[in-house]
Image 1: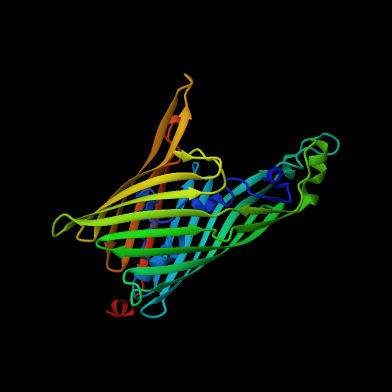
Image 2: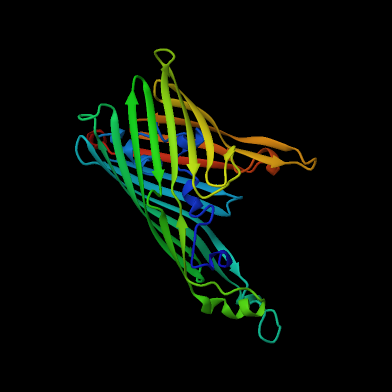
Length: 352
C-alpha cells in the first residue's frame, strides 16, 4: 500500500474499494441488487433517496461480517431520522479493519541479531462516515424521491500512513405503474484521498532493501453509476415475490467484468426475495460475473451466488446472508456469513 501510493496524484482501480463491499443481510442476500428497492436506514449506503420510504419513526441498524477466516472485520452502524413527512436524515459509519498485524521492521537489529521482543502489532483500518439526506418530491412529480450523501473517508496503515478524503453521492428512486427505478451516482464529484506518510517509521529499512520512499500524495476515486429496476409480484394473500436487477458502471478503466472497455466496465446483479406475510423472507442473487482462464487456456464465465434469509418481529428485523468471496475459477469458495439487525424506535410500543 505504501509503494503504490508514491505518485503525487493518481486514479487507480479499486480506490476506496471497501466502500463496494455492501451492507445489510437483506441486500447482500440479493447480491447487492438493491439500488431501487432500498427503503430503510440502509439507504444511506445503497441509495439515499430510499430514506424517503423509511419508517416515520427513527431507525437504527448494526451489521458485522468477518472475511478471510476472521482476519478482516467489517462493521456498520447507522441511524435514520424523519425530519417531517417529506424529509429524512441519516448517519452511517463503516469500518473495515485488519488488527494485530506483526510489525517486523525492527526484528533484525543493527548487529544482525534477531529479537522477537522487538515485534509490535498494528492495525490497518478503512473508515467511512456518511451524512445522508432525502426528499420526497411526490407532490411535484408523483413517485419520485431524491437524496444525497456527504462522505468522509479516513484510512490508516498503522503508524506508517494516514489518509483523509471527501466526496459526494447522489441518488433517485422513481415509482411508476408497479415498477421501481433507481439510480445511484457514487463519487459524483470524484472522491479525493490525501495520503500522508510517516517515513521516519520505515525509511531506514526501505533504503536498506532498495525500496522507493513514498511521498505524500492524492488518490482519486472516479465516479460510478448504478441503474436498477425492480417489481413486486403478489403471489397470494400471504406470499409475494420481489425481483430486482442492477447494472453498475465504473469509469476507472477496464475491469474483469462481463462488459468491459478501456474506459468503462459494467457489472450486472440480480436478486429475488420471497416474503411470507411480510415476516419471513428467503433471498437469492447472483453477481460478480467474471472471466477466467484455466490451464487449458480456455476462457470461462463464472458467477457468484448469494443466499439469505430474514425475520421481522415487533420492531426488530434480523437478516442473514452467505456469500462466497470467490467462486468457480478462483478455486475453492471462501464463504462469508453476514448478520445485520434493524430496530425501529417506537416509544408507544416500548411503553406498552
